[in-house]
Image (cartoon, rainbow, N blue to C red; front, side, top):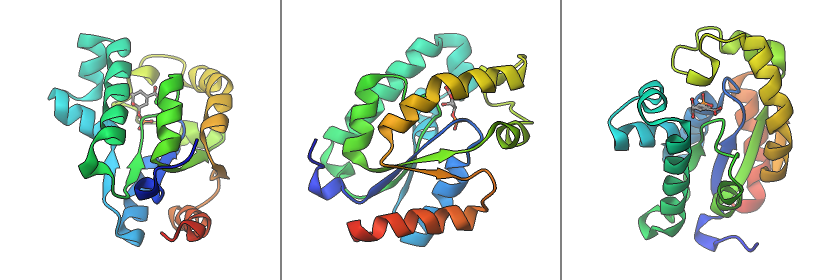
Length: 182
Ligand code: S3P
């Protein structure tokens, strides 16, 4: 699918909970000067509830519908047709239409982090309903298995960022964006 020219320079971060999308997104935004848009944060502001409450009161299916509505809005609204750094919720790739929209928004980067590092980084996962009160290791293992193919097919490129510092991840992404003129 041809990219929308004015959106070619957005950088979209995808990956599992704990993969560092928010932290890397903030640093990338600083490094590039591009405005940061965090889909979880926008949804929380729209609904007026945090993610755990949205899941508890409205259910995961409703949250997924909100993600699709937001992506559709970003794609179709002229004022958002400027380059952004977009960090996303880990499950945003579950719906096929989301995967297509994400790729149309810009360069999609998969932050791929291994299980031990995900476990360490989600150790205080209070704000993550999908990891709450469960065997976190088993759950993350399941998510890696079920979602990796979806991240793979959505991303333009993957960074194995398990052992990388934030600055190294940012540098790796910036190298990939030079051809876009970002
Ligand atoms: C989710 C990841 C979360 C948030 C929600 C669901 C998921 O975002 O969107 O709790 O399905 O993996 P982060 O990946 O930023 O934690």
